[in-house]
Amino acid sequence: MALSPSRHADYEHLREKAIALRRSGHSLRQIRDELKVYNNDLLNRLVKGEPPPEWTRRPNAKDDLRARARELRLQGWTYDRIQMELGCSKSSVSLWVRDLPAPERRSRTREESSAIAKKGWQARLRVREEERQRTRRRAEEETRGMADRELFFAGVALYWAEGSKSKPYSRRERVTFVNSDPNVISVFLAWLALLEVDPASLRFAVQIHETADVAAAEAFWAEHVGIKSDDLLKTSLKRHNPITNRKNTDQEYRGCLRVDVRDGAELYRRIEGWWYGIVGAVIASDLRNRT
Image (cartoon, rainbow, N blue to C red; front, side, top):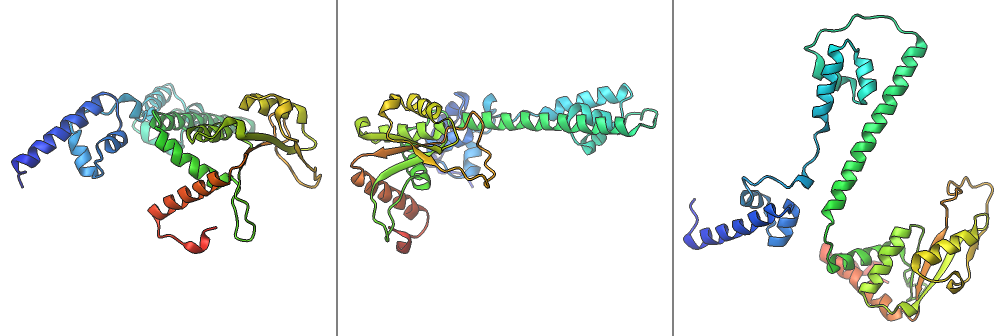
């Protein structure tokens, strides 16, 4: 069905914008959010004929593996050796080289078979790690240019997951956040800055097992948040339980950092409201779960 002249003009105007965004390096998701076009069929028609930006392309590493597998097969390598060298599955090797002549078979010792299996597994782990890193890099690219509003919502969710919360049986309207990940602490502090929380109202304290290097942990966290170690509140030591099989005992273990906002009752109420505003926008409100 043909579009009316006015709708056709609107469509062409929208397509011009979409093409301009595509050529400037935007992904489909970024174009969708920019133009407020949430119909996937329409979105794909708007950018039809325009190739995706290079950073959104998923590398097809198997093309290179296939070529290498065929090269090795022509040199007389067995499926096992090719699998061991490339770190791919034997079924993939079979698919890629089944039209090529098979090498002469020979018997292998148990040690040789074991070495082949071990090396094959190591190669497969290497390929998996490379794929994992490629996925991470693509995901990082998708968060380029995060806006303040996006940080706002991320901070609300982060606090409600990790921060202290008031309960009907224990009213404590205070802002306290504890985490062991320095990056999480950095995001939380950036969120507080976005909310224009006075840095002078922040208090920090380390929480750590008594058997750890407490002084080193205090120095690390103080430097991380930009204060002196003497400005930290008293460190909270956790008693060591020899029965517990703790894994966090290496030199990288620095315990947790607690961040308190003084006189934060009003801020806490706002955080609570923001969180339930998010919940209400997604599902029907459940008043029984509110504090």
